[in-house]
Image (cartoon, rainbow, N blue to C red; front, side, top):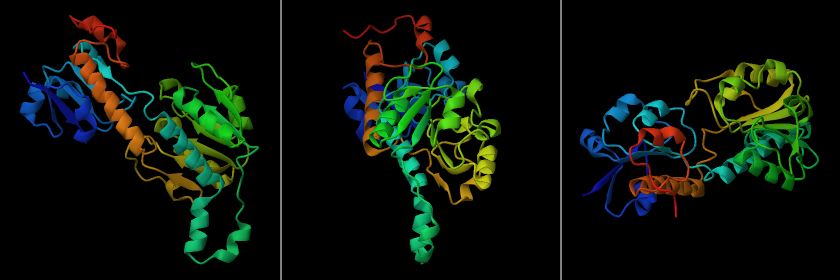
Length: 319
């Protein structure tokens, strides 16, 4: 019997088919009949997987999300049906860390403004453009999970002193443990790598930005809701912040904000974790997770570990 696995969102068949069951049929653009027959699904970040969509896939046994964010997946509905929501932690770690450093370099070296000087024939104005240095500067990390640790290693390689604050994960070398207040007060670059929770929504607000070093740079590759954009814009205009780099927004895609037009702002469309290598690794891990569940084995990582309580025959552990 053919095993039907569907793609929700733009899923490249070449990146998933080699890792699916041999008797599997992958449908990248499923219609109602394909959804009805699907036992597995590989889902991109943007599509909404709600109870209605799950209801159109009554035979679904596993859902794999390419990435770790499950904001647009109804985890409660999936868990109630005994469906594991596979996630792919680690595949984009290095890519996002590199992205955070890329945004940092673009802002500290003022690449956007420098490009405009050359493009517009304003070479004579270069003497008035002050560039910063990473060597000898302090990088402050909010969040010290996989991506935070990878960012710390890169910052250390640039000769930066690294501070980190994480209420859940231990801070390890080369980063030094710091309080939230110390990160804001002592850092030349503040890089965000926290998940979005009610407790840290707008963790970067007007009150905390009033405490940063004048000219500090703020980079967000975590979640858009971590930053109050109005407060960041005010801090930029006052000179309290020297630059802002954003890869994430709330919502996505974002409505236009005046911050986006500031010359010391660099923007990317939630792309830093989608390098060629990271994308291939993410798809492969998602497909492996689907295959594991359909083969009766435990997936490597799930967002809803309680799913087994609602499943009559939970997968076996890896041998």
